[in-house]
Length: 85
Image (cartoon, rainbow, N blue to C red; front, top):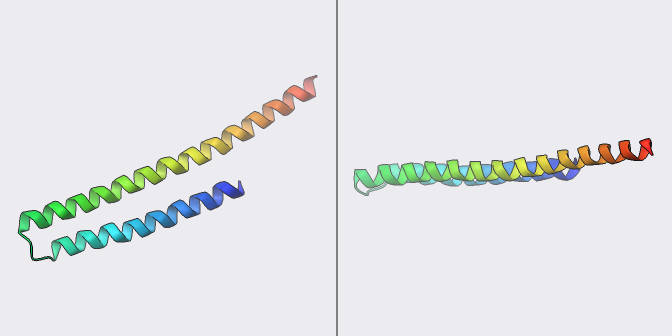
């Protein structure tokens, strides 16, 4: 549980860092001197990147939680098998 807790904390910190970077990129693209369609395109791409980063980090977090849950279930089943013998 300890490793999963800190892994999830690290994943959340990475999301916050990437979120700040993507949002600042989106704000910079809207306040730039480029053509208006480029500003909108850059802003949309920055927000889509933010969504992609969040989904990727969320998938990694789910894998860690599932692995720990599976490990607990398998250890309980092994203990149950040992007790029946």
